[in-house]
Amino acid sequence: MHMRVDIEPGRYVVAVSGGVDSVALLDILSKTPGLKLTVAHFDHGIRGDSSLDRELVQKLARQYGLPFVYHQGNLGAGTSEEAARLARYAFLRQVQRASQAQAIITAHHQDDVLETAIINMLRGTGRRGMSSLQSHRHLVRPLLTVPKSDLQAYAKDQGLVWREDSTNQDLTLLRNYIRRVLLPKMGREAKHTLLTHVSHMSVLNRAIDKDLLVYLHIQPSRQSLDRHQFILLPHAVALEVMAQWLRSHHISFDKKLLEQLVSKAKTLAPGKQIAIDRSHHLRMGRETIVLIVN
Image (tube, rainbow, N blue to C red; front, side):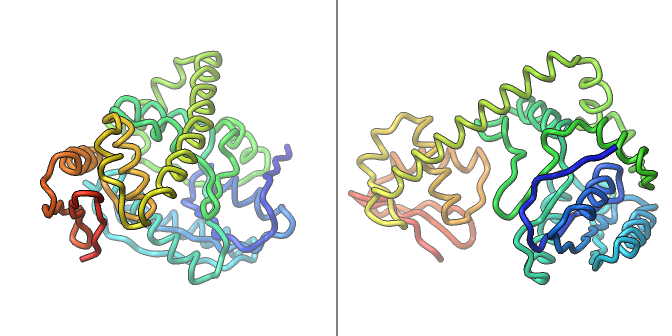
């Protein structure tokens, strides 16, 4: 059985957990010409047997003749999926910088796209949640169109060795329930329909983001918005403009904060300020909304 990925030649960090998906990805990448790979493994410190994952990944890196980097975290068993994800990607970005790699490669696949879309819908996602798993310039996900079953078949065919994460059996975790109970019952047609919707949302999101960037480009400056224009925007559009503006400055926010910022930006008297985080706030003027770095 043969699998290939379309990745331009260059230097990359490949994230390998030790599970079947990332082990299969590593094997595929090792057979792809023109790639200089660094194998990165993050031990979250959540499972007692996680050191065995590291030992396996280190052994695989040695077999492929690739440099290996790992970090031992201490997040604890009660850590949320989001907190674990943030810690993991912070480590991967650090390895990327240290190895001067052009991007990180992860083993997210088609089933992950479905799981993430369903989870985000259940949690009341915005437009981005339906198409959040994508490849970007510095984060390459070459398996997004590949079903997990194909990766499992490839790994078995190639005689690969991997580890099973015992926490994946816990059906009280939403992602595990979707993966092990809901998705198997959906059927091929329902999965195809959902994937089609995700693809359409991805196209729509790119178009919306492009228009938002054009809107921000014609503002008084990169640090300010025309307040008169902003007040006249429909609430849903104002939320998108504010979100894109904050993202352009690499400022993190959640839905609640975004709602507060938009509401106060439209109603506060000139001279008033709104705190965003410890490092940023918005100052209201008569003509503009100004982003201030503390």
